[in-house]
Amino acid sequence: MLIVGTTASRRYRTAIMGLGVAIPEKVVTNHDLARMVDTSHEWIVTRTGIVERRLAADAEAASDYAVVAARRALEKAGVEARELDLIIVATVTPDMPFPSTACLVQHALGAVGAAAFDLQAGCTGFLYALAVADQFIAGGRYSRVLVIGVELLSRITDWTDRNTCVLFGDAAGAAVVGPAEEGIMAVHLGADGSGSHLLYQPAGGSRLPASHRTVERRQHYIHMNGNEVFKFAVKVMTQASLAVIRKAGLSRQDVDLLIPHQANKRIIDASAKRLGLREDQVYVNIDRYGNTSSASVPVALYEAVEGGMVREGDIVLLVAFGAGLTWGSCVLRWGVQ
Ligand code: ACO
Image (cartoon, rainbow, N blue to C red):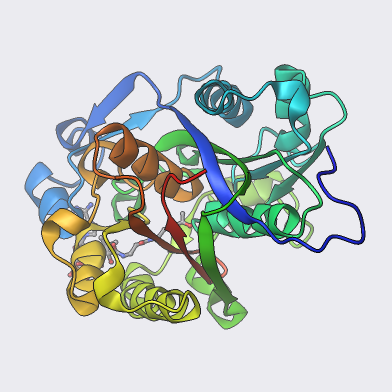
């Protein structure tokens, strides 16, 4: 649906019209993991803040969760799937290399004619996708965009590696966005490919296509330098937050609520402290889900909204970092349409 012509004189803000999530039923606790690898509940909680995570069933794929989250977001927004102009799915765990998961979602929803593509920016994926949607909406080109962050990280987690397997979980979060008087005030995105080796899945692409050898070498799993990623995360979460606050013409004191990427409670705490935010101004659910990558920000935002933590007119700050390395942040004024 084209809302203004090429001679558009009016610019819109992009508002989140509805949010939805899909969370797997299966709960895996730290105690469960302690029976699989050499770890303990105490170590995991102290170092990460994670108590349990949710994992998808064997027969399920990313699009199954994306579709459920999308249907719920559409319902909340009061938007029909056939009204959608564009579907963007942020994921590093698509159903398959191609076609895109977004096309599978488009078909399942019956969003006939909507453009659809996947976008990959690690755990920053949802914010990258939201920024792309914002361009289409604010420029007047589209009026209904579905943005999904979905991840089945369990599929690329090495369940014999205690350094990584305690961290991740599966989930999906979706947002329907459209034009409004108030909404996204500023976005800030960045990347530094020199850190690509710090967090990656070595095989399965054109560099190391799948072979017996790559499977034997466990190269289809997440490989991570946890310490380096940790240092990068604390620095960039603060920098990206300050940059977007500045772009929005605001100051730190204007922020009512921070929705950070849920990678590690210590990263969240350090970032919040540097931003001068109180504990009750930061939404945290890592204890229940672990790191769900590109699903983490929309799931946290959904829960904060449903839990009554976000009031009309509030200034909400979203911030994430991820593989790439990438980072992204967004400031929006909530709920005025
Ligand atoms: N249980 C028990 N011991 C463990 C475990 C575990 N699960 N994992 C590591 N250890 C051990 C290490 O082997 C090490 O032992 P050593 O000293 O004998 O060598 C010791 O604990 C300390 O390890 P560190 O890596 O120094 O622990 P740290 O406090 O840095 O915490 C962690 C590790 C949790 C991984 C942290 O570095 C972190 O959170 N990093 C950021 C991770 C992140 O955000 N990743 C983003 C992924 S997003 C994406 O795109 C998928």
